[in-house]
Length: 253
Image (cartoon, rainbow, N blue to C red; front, side, top):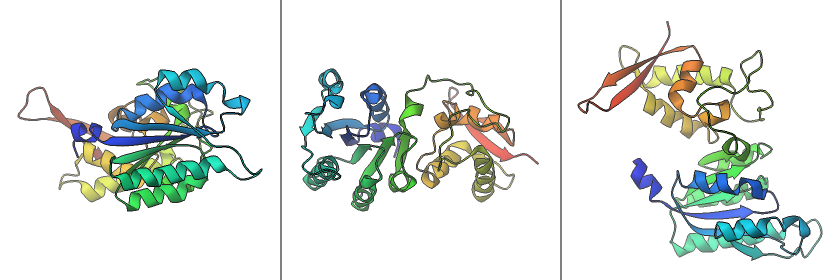
């Protein structure tokens, strides 16, 4: 699927207000525009609770429909049940191509799996505390803290091991692990001279790790991120179009 087709995808955006702060909404909507067009935009919570009052202006500004769900029983999350029921209703309406589930709650793991079984594209968003099973159940997963950080083409502050300071998350693949994975992928997809198309490498990484995003490591694009690992050669090859060149990557000997 090319980028134009991808951005034409109709996506139902379902937000769990109990597990997401209103400060992230701009970044959520901006990121969804990279994956498709939001059609349904709904947020679920008990709006009689004072802690959700800060959402009022946000919902008006972004045309998000609040769905009221009273907490009938202590210890039971009625909001989750309402979101899940709505998701299945939308699925059977056949009006969307995918879903964006915004929550840091593992209770939506089964929902994400079921939607993908039905052929839906499932984009997850949540904080770094999100349990790994929910992340893995999504086709793609984005960390809200990363989306809200200032975009940069240079690395964030790192410790002696080359890891972002205060930016680690259990389940996020480390740079050390990525280096070995990238080396193996290059060996699998490269030509006889050891060169592999960088775009294909990125595609394989995205399929293997739902939460893979160069922004997690402080880089806006794949090329500068891979270059920072110091383990690979990168070369540009011209195409028939003078303004277009393709990037290729090879393991350093």
